[in-house]
Image (tube, rainbow, N blue to C red; front, side):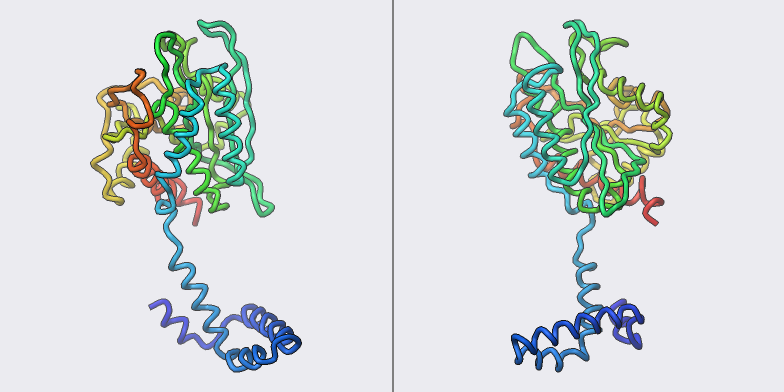
Length: 344
């Protein structure tokens, strides 16, 4: 119907006509100078160029995939593999510095500007330097104006008795965010509204308490509140352990109700609702400090994961399909629920 309406239109707008005429004249002049036969063909086809131009534009728009269809679970999994190859990545380690370099490089390749938020904190293992990575997007002369957070932690828990590489716990959500960076970065107007945050020090060195664990998100929240930047964020999604081959996302029972409803709605729209449910209790994760300062944040987590905090949390326990499911639902949620009013 839309194509028929265009064909029946009397003519393009004046500006469109002028643009077409300029391009046509240029092509004809070049053709006369170098390719006389091409010039004659251009003259014979020129009367059809207006309609062809409009049809080509419509065709390109019609063939553009939805943003949630652009996400690649395979690409996300490849990032996880790179992180796992660095080995255990607890806060303050050489391996986590290598992870930081890799994450920064991938973000910049996708057009994001990265800031290191470094700080020192006391831990049961002594004073350690942690570094949050904060990425924003500005392009085409427009400054970033983020209003929504996408977050993950990228450290792994320290164990003295076995080698813990955290393919799912720390790795899967980081790979997911890097693929988000690639996909969202191809949509500058949307990307400018997003801030990506990679938290360091999510894992406790001994046991979670007010002073052990969530180092990065606690510091980020304090800085956001003191700098009043918390007010600019209308919400956020935290991702943690999202790659389990037997995927079952379990939203904490204290999740912001409207956000949870919309995530379920996004999953339903993509016929993936069976992978999303509620957990039977609250969870202490990086979303807690954000909610505490007034940024409603949903924890997208699969807590039913038997290899959690064991040597068995390896790359073979996660899958590209699971990452695809979470990535697609999250992008649908962003596009059709969380940020849709801003895109009108």
